[in-house]
Amino acid sequence: MTKRLFYPFVTFFFFLFVSNTPAYSAEDIEMINRPVNTSGLTGLLFTTSPFTVPVRTVEIGGSVISEKSTTPAYTLTEFPLSVTIGIADNMELAVRGSYIQRDTAPSLVDRGSGDAEISYKWNFKPQAEYSNVPAVALFVTGIAPTGDRGKDLNRVHSWGTRFGLSAGSEISFDEHVLGLYADAQLVLQDVTTPTYRDIYSVVNAGALFPISKYRNLQIFIEYTMVNGKKIVNVDGLDFSATTYGLRLVSERFNLSLGTQFIRKEQEGFDKSSRLIGMVSMKF
Image 1 (tube, rainbow, N blue to C red):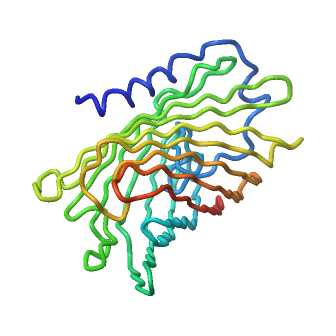
Image 2: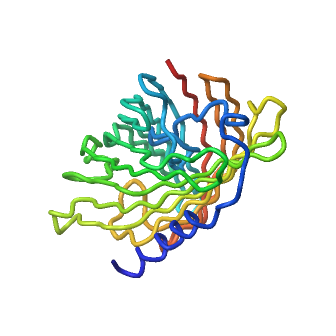
């Protein structure tokens, strides 16, 4: 594994093993709802947690992700829609599609479908009671080239896949609970086509803290890093980003709002920001 992929995975495994102190039972104080993220897997907005939706539960999620850039001037808005199913204990399956709109100065607008994805997650090491040792999950995503190529709204040309590990611990103290989550992913896109071949890493980490008496109002912060990307597509090239957000949940409903600040490594691109809104419902 090259150095650009080595360091993110070292960071991930460090997070995995640092926590090993006694805690309250996970059944005494816990998150009242663990909704899906913008990729369709249970998590924050971008971070994938190791937890899964309950077996035979269906969660439908819809998002708006709008990025505003000044240099160069453009607005990129994506509307992801996902359906997630708890297929077994500690396993979930998610299907995701999206619609994308890109506005570039002065008046050029491109609209079309994005690529389709199907993801599977297996929480093979649940968090034990009375322990802060993180739960660990394996997840893999297949990407189908359904994006509009003529308008450069696609991420892959023939196929793509992401696979990785997620770790997370929900730490209870007094009458409070703190969620800490991280994931590390390796992304392979069009590796059989030299013109479009790309292999890069993605790391996400985040924390979630309920701020209301009944834990239904929560704040969260996330950090994202994309490293080693060589092919320019609708996602651009390497970047790092920090996301701040607020989440309102009930046992079945979720509303999450966030602001993301992006630092791009691509020459000629200044910093940009995103507004993110997401709702989901469990059935």
